[in-house]
Image 1: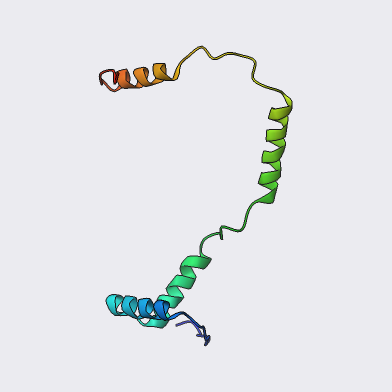
Image 2: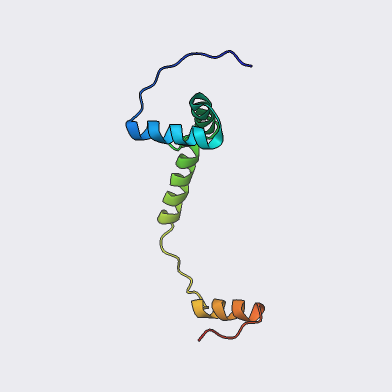
Length: 96
């Protein structure tokens, strides 16, 4: 077993009740529930961490697209045509 380090934390009453209930349901100690929660939280990339280089590349791409001006070509299809093609591909009747 890994060396354990004692920590003291403060939680709200509702969190305490939930922790106790979950520990009883799973047959685990409250400490084990907390350790597993910490493992889950630290094994994923936090949502606040972002790849700033990727964002800079994206901003440059957007700026270049905007500088090129509006798209001059007119589309030759209608959205409904796509739906009809998809329905035909899967052997369904026209939804209209």
